[in-house]
Amino acid sequence: MTFIIAIQLNDSIVVTTDNKKAVLKKSGETQFSHEKLEKMHAWNHGIITGTGENGVICRSIEIFKNLADSDIRNLPQCLDLSRKIREMEIGEDYIQVENTKLLCSSYTQHGAQLYKIERFDTSDDYAFTCIEPMDITVWLFHPNIETISANLQNLYHDLKDYSAFSNQTEWINYYLNRLAPIYQKQSQQDPFMSSCFDVFFQSKDAYIYGHIPNTQSGTLDFQEYFEI
Image (cartoon, rainbow, N blue to C red; front, side, top):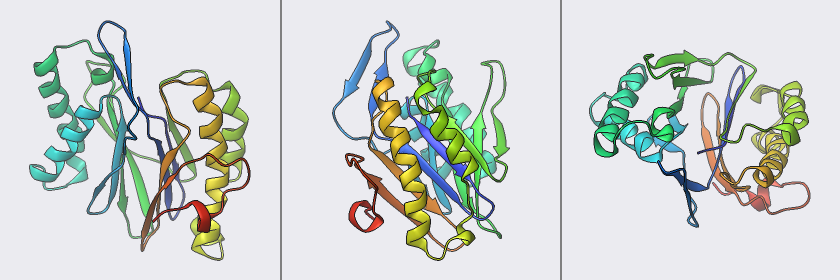
């Protein structure tokens, strides 16, 4: 049950994930953990994250690295195998397991690229989709986004490539100060997510990863809040 905002620009990407750990049991009961969960996983060319059951996501990545030669085109099969193993362990009809999907980033000749691995019906195969430039992907558990709809619209209209900024710090602060209020607002509506979040910036030549406590009341400053 992860809240993800993934931004695909022409020459770079920005990905954020919340840090809350929640388990939805078959009985319908929800169990929360107080520990902060890191939901982005590094691989040779970027990160992999996802929504759904954390165990399915982590095992998918293990299969990807150890058996699939870290070829991102094999991620759909890795996710399918991981889900089937989990269903053998606990049975079928667990919503978190059935709806698990992945998001992967990779370096490209022109910058960085995001890919989605998901299915829209339990009878479907997992699709591997390249996210189009200047697009925002939002994955969340709570369906009501009324409080953040204006923020998301403004974020979409304000999208700028990495090349549009004079330096890396300016690029980071620009997006952090548009993303932080979204996490603050939505976490007040959605008990399955945290207001704090991890963020990943990737361009053609480098990546930056950090954790944002998101307890500030004013403007975020890269120098003060961002941890590399």
